[in-house]
View 1 (cartoon, rainbow, N blue to C red):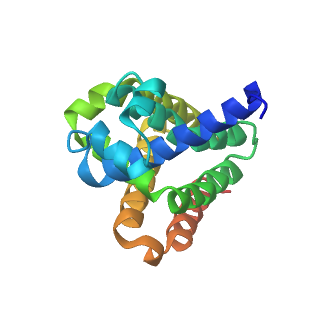
View 2: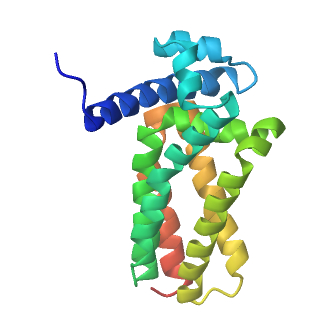
Length: 196
């Protein structure tokens, strides 16, 4: 039997890390950060505690890795809409693709909102969350500047509150939430207000 090559080792490593992170997401989402131990994560993932510590220095580092992975889809979405010239179309893409992200990442939504509400978790993951929030607020601000909004900050906070509200409803009600109807009404309101 020949030894594994580097690409095979990397594949195994990535698969193991994903199993660990998925188990941690599930447990953090339902038990909170403090209510979840590395021991429980190892049992849920079906791996040894030693393997977890091989990849992550601590539970805090594991959480940071999850946050980075969780925000990847949003970063990609923000980059995608940053090149769209039409501000209404950019808002439509932001809201439409957010629905997909919400549906595909319910546990990640649970973690995000529980992190925001738990002081200790906010301290651990706060830097990454702040970085993504600043980037998204800047991008959405540019959309409202293009629309000619008088109070850009308030417009950004309104859409952020709308998206947070829908995300929380998704966590509670799942598929029953009429995402498209809510976001379409918001877009119609924006078109009317800004004469588009």
